[in-house]
Length: 308
Length: 304
Figure 1 (cartoon, one colour):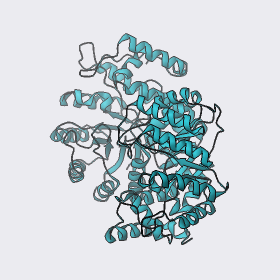
Figure 2: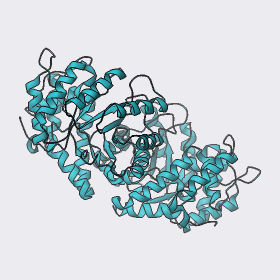
Figure 3: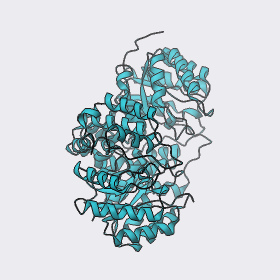
Figure 4: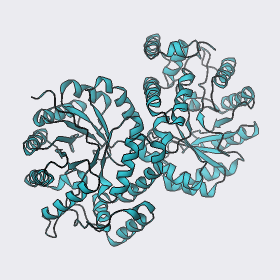
């Protein structure tokens, strides 16, 4: 196993949606266009297919083909981080191995789905994924999405000792107690270890020491996301507060409706990516109207690009 | 009305004698210590002050002592939360009678109240007194019961004396949800964190905090607040990591461990009432080692 995986500082990471055709197949032509849109509108890296890209609704072969397609389409313009989460460890490890063979720059993985695993199970899971990937591994901490399963600072200490390519945590817990404990330990973690904000609520994370951001809202409001990221990266945190509040409002408007609302909002900006796959349902007209009027109330969105 | 609630405010522990009765002389000494070591306000009795393990008459007695000893040097607020709502209102009226500068109340205990019930509670409380009222949002201790941004906005619109929140979710999303709603309607609404999580809150509208560690390391608390207000993020980070490490140390069996740490700083305040344990000699020794490792023993006041 490679012991010194090259460090990757992914910076501002866009997480594209996965467009589907009317028949429900992946629309690769549209996906290529969406990837180009992200690259032209501020993405410093891409992570795909995240939950925002409906990873859990893709068949295994589709998921592999999607990663291969994206890497071929990006042609080295940006690093591509492959999302390899699965419930079963060997399945996630197989996706990680595939990601490396396909040319991904890094992999990202959540705690295992469904099993509400113990810490020991989580450590074994990530260890096998990391060993299979031989690429920087980012651990995705999203207790709200994962039935309360958390990545703890202690777990990160253990992983660091076991896994030389453990590169950082993408945090969606938004939990100050966890993030500060993690960064207090950072000196004991691998050099180059990174805390990355898992969503656009970035100011507090950066204050604590985060150095990057996954941006699921970038398909809707890439300018706003880019401005927030730039201010945060320059440590201009007081100056970032207004933009932070605007993006928090956008996140709140989209969050309740999940990926269906995210896709609807991207579509409302003139970039139709089709409906989500079942079991997710498209927003009904009333909820769609509410989403659009909440978006209209966010003044900063008026400057955002419409269409492709 | 709320501009006086900012900076690192101290909520004293409750000193007890060996027989677990109230130790008034030590409480007076502790109040004076906090005022002399840069507390921006006093608030008593928080959970850290074992509020729920004190009788109502004990709470009134020490509330009077707090107002008397502080004597207008800094604001004094009284935490009026009690299991029985009727006792909360009694404590609130008492706080006003004795000349307190405000009251603080958590969402009602135990009943997992709906948002409508929380709203009715704060409406009744704010109407019962002619004092500034601070709310206390602590979802992790109250099974997820919390004040949403929407509810905060309704309360602010209805209640002119509803001036701030002690926010203890320590979560970016929850803090921002409340701060966005509150500050848009009342720009001087006091966004305060439950303990010293100043680094993540000040850049997004926070103006201060209550304090877990202030009876151990008041200098560190004051320096952290200053660094945050100056926007000196590298310095603030270094200080925040240190303060938060102490919080992790004290959070375990809070406030027993804190009282144990105070022994090591030359400020003994006695045992802790059951069901909370009292810090053992071993626990005190462990805390002393950590305080030494962090340089607290050399950089902070020893004794009263």
